[in-house]
Amino acid sequence: MPFPRDLPGRPEERVVRQLAAALLFEGIVEPAAAGVDGGERRLVWRSGGREFRCLASAGPFGRPRIRPGSVEMRGEDGNWRAATLDRMVAGLNAPEPHLAGLLAELERTVSLCRWNAANLPATPRRGLSFPDLECRLEEGHPYHPCFKARLGFDEADHAAFGPEVGQRFQLVWLLVARSCLHLAIPGEEEEFWQSELGPAAWAEIERRREELNLPATDYCLLPLHPWQWWDLREGEGASWLRPWLADGRAVCLGPLGDHYRASQSVRTVMNADDPRKADVKLALNIVNTASRRIIDPHSVCTGPAISEWLTAVVAGDTDFSDRYPLTLLPEYVGIIADRDGPLAGQMAALWRRSVQSTLGEGESAIPFNMLMVTEADGSAFAAPWIERYGLLPWLDRLLEVAVLPVWHLLVRHGIAVEAHGQNMVLVHRDGWPVRLILRDFHDSVEYTPDFVADPGLLPDFPNLHPAYRDAPPDRYYWAGGIDALRELAMDTLFVFNLTDVSDLLALKHGLPEPEFWRRVHDLLEAHASRHGLEERHRRVGHAAPEILTESLLRGKLLCAREEIHHTVPNIFARFALEGSR
Image 1 (cartoon, rainbow, N blue to C red):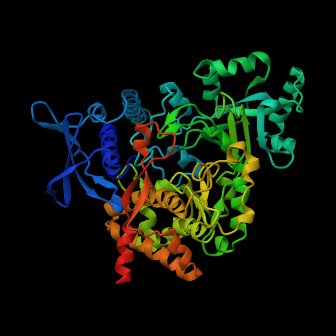
Image 2 (cartoon, one colour; image 1 turned 45 degrees about the horizontal axis):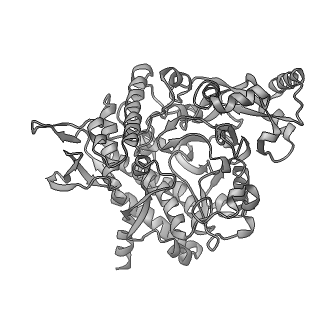
């Protein structure tokens, strides 16, 4: 089921359109305007000696709104025809291997979209439980053109482990020598394992451990995704893991315990037998969307410390319970093998509280990015709620619930989180928004020492990982300036998140996008006034004329190890200027 601009049954058109939008948005190609057609400009650009064009308007923050079916290329005969991925990629300014890799991901995205259309029924999603929605949210990233690449999976792997398919599977469990592990397990370790695994699985592991003469004092459990176990045994990582299996540093116990299903992120799995038990984030050596989905080694044992910090901040501010209801899903245990060796990031796991465990009587939850999509009949997923409560009352409540907790955490406490659509969960009662859930903190939180409100609560980063001790700002969690906090918060919450909600409401419910964003601006201004935070609000500078945003496609083209950014116009500057007049 599509985003509102998608043409049913034409996944290649969507990928071409998102590729063109990213090329234009990030300035990778330089277009010239060639006339106006019904409020849209015809943009023309040259790449690799070939001419391309599309019809587009500029959305908030300069996000291109490209008319479906309008991305074309001029043929050698001079006629215009639908642009193709290979031609669009061939002319880009990047090393040939990088272009080949990008094209492979784009083509794989089209292929898996077609597989889904041929093999999965387009049944209604309204009313499904949160875990079912996580599986059924098949649309992928609304901006990145490689939104379903999953390089490394073949079709059989996709059928077994793709979230859209919803298959159940067990994790593969290893006993790994403690000398090869780093662990962050608050409390009693055995108590954690018994609670996590349950009596039957724990008894089986203890029996196997005794048979193998591998005492708990010397060996610790570590789960692997079944595909990752195959890859490390037979695929790219085999040369690294086989010596461990040969000399006894690792011993495989096989599939054990509860069954899991993949969430929309693919590598985080949800407990299918008991949805209130923890989600587990696992290393997965596939390339999906923007990166290879292993887990940053430094972040695994830091995750629980960051979760403790954020939990203390939220618990210490009654506004997070009274005014801006916010629930965090802490990552409370982390385990990694060979943290500083060749397997670093390939054998790691983080346990995170599940959404289902937080829901009270009468509450339901949806992934926030469900608000960007439509159902098979073409109506917005949220259409029944909008019709029940009225567009503007429902939208105002949605913005209060979704925006203000993130903004209060930034302006009041000096902490920026990566609040994109996948990391946010909306809790509602019969469609009326009631609170926000945030998740996935281990590698996506930033602060600055001179802006964080309570430095005494910060984790002891230098003692969590050696890499932190002499690291410069902007490499890990501490930023070099407030501008970096503004970028993370606005990039994820606004530029690559709410812009897609405002687009849907404009197309499906007739709400002009400037009206949507004026309401957001007024909300932020009112927040600062209400709490006497005008000075800190000004320092964040949400209404600067231009802001930086991450160049997701350029970073992929260059295989960049650090983030790359570009400047975009800030829609809030317009409202601030009007207000000052």
